[in-house]
Each structure stands twice: as structure tokens, then as C-alpha cells.
Length: 380
Image (tube, rainbow, N blue to C red):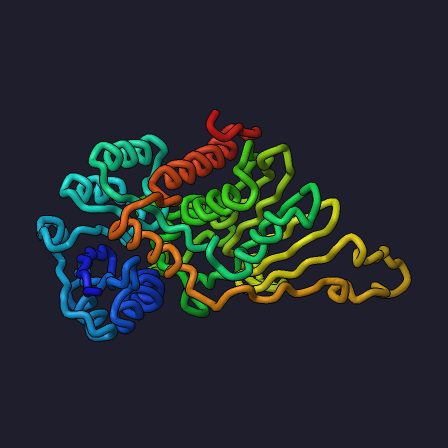
């Protein structure tokens, strides 16, 4: 048994998602545990080289997590042979060129989504990775959340019978920065930086729908901008030039109809900021990020629309919460562990850049549907 160092370049280390998820919930805890266990008893010990544009912020992040290696020079980091994995969590705009640069430097690739800003760009990134014969992967964290893992088990068991419909609801109120600070970075609302709800969130919906239902056949999408101006991190008001709401009607594999309701301009009154509801002939299931409830055909409630008084049933009573079937593990950590073992041990990895291309195909179809105001077949 031995410790096996694995060098990781983490670009965009000062970003919120990098600090909270990739460092705070994955790589730093793995370091604190002495590394990731591998087959045969060895341990993979991450050596993290943080990359960012602001030297002061990098130093602060390093002090926060006890990490000493950081640089503002991405080219120098890529030229360092001690670091064999490149991870990109920097802004969406320019990701395609950064990934290609890392591939050309001989690095293995793991990246946030989306992998590019257009379908042609995404395909070119995948082509470059395949030609270089590197290990490549893209983040698919949502499918590893406990509630959605429970839903996947239920769907695989066929206990719901023939699926007749599905619905994803996602969103909450993102403050515009005038009365309260916004909860998302301002670049999310600017086209020139790769902003927009469809580009940001539809990659998630694409891999979730592929994972749970076998894919999407077609989409009809509508987008809108509910909040026309916001305040950036420097206190400046700017015009929002991308959508903050996108609703879609989908046809899933096998002809199953589905709805996709996504917005950054709603106040939540449901089980969580994201829920997936599936109806089948033998039962239904509703999953949030951590919980899942089912209602069998035998227990299906019989409400009615009351015209004189309130609903006579408590419609929550007929639902049964599914128990946990495994100890909790953070959803981002699932993907990272799979990827690190893929690099260190070989073998298949189900979430390569080809999944990133499929996500862009879904995004491309959504935007085409908005522009042409019609149903678009995925892959058409």
C-alpha cells in the first residue's frame, strides 16, 4: 500500500462553486482523510494547484483551505508536468479554448458544464480529447443527490408501471442587488460572459433526463427576462441581456410527455428549490434533492374541486417517504471519486465529454425552438 500523488490544476479557484463544492466539499476533505482509497489498498493524494486572475483572492482561498500552491499564470500551470489533471470552473465564456489548451498540453480533463458555448465548439473539444487519448469527464452532480438516486432506483424497479408524464420544477428568487445582495454572480446575467439560464441550467436537465428516462426526443421552449436590470459586484446597475426564465414542453424517450419549469424569479412553495415529479400507471414519485416520496395505485387519493369549502383531504397524507439506502456522500464527491479512479486505475467512465456534447445539443435545440417558435427534434 502506498500514497500516490495526483496533481490537479483547478482553474477558477476563487469562484463560488470552486470554493464551496470542489474544494470545500471534495478535494480538501479527501486531503484531510489522507487521500482516496484505490483498488489494492493504495491511496490517491491530490496535490492542488489553484489558478485564478486575482492574486489577493487566490491567497485568501489558499489560507481558507490550507493550500499553498497557486498562480495567476495558466500557461505556466499547464506547462508543469507534475500536474496531470486540468479542471475548469472558471466562467463559461472561453471554456472551449481553455479546455483545448489543456488537452494540447497533454492534461486529462474534468470540467464544469457547459463545456462550450456552441454545438460546434463542444464537438471540437470532444474530438480533440479523443484524438489525444486522454481521460475526460464533465460534472453531473445532480444525478448523485440522494433524492434523485432514490428516484432512479424506483424507476429501475418498474414499480410505477408505464410512465405517463414527468415534470421538473426548479428555481427561487434571485435578488437584483438593489434591496438585498444577489445570490448569483453578475456574469450569469450577461451574454458576453456566457450568461443565461438555458446555458447555465439546461446541461443539468439534459444529463438528468438522459439518466432517468433515457433521453429527450423533442423540445418546445419559451424564454423570458423577468428582472430587466441588476446590480453587479461593484455596485453598478447593468441591463440584463439574457433570459432568467425558461419553460419547456418535452417528449422523452418512448414518447413520454414532460414539463420543464425553470426560473430565477419565483418564490418557493414546494418541498425544495428543485423537484422531479413522475406519474405512472401503478404509482407516482416526487423527488427533491435529498428526499423522495411515492404514492401507489392502492393509496392514490381521491380529491375533488370544492366550490363551497376547502379541500376535504390532506393531499400529503397519501405519500410515503422512501428510506435512505446508503450513507450520505456529497453529490460532487461521487463524480470526483469516479473520475480520479478512472485516471488512476483505468476502466470505463460514463460521464465523458460526449455527455457534455449531448448537453449542448439540448441547449441548441432549446434556443432554436425559442427563435423559430416551434418544436425541435433533438439531434435534428
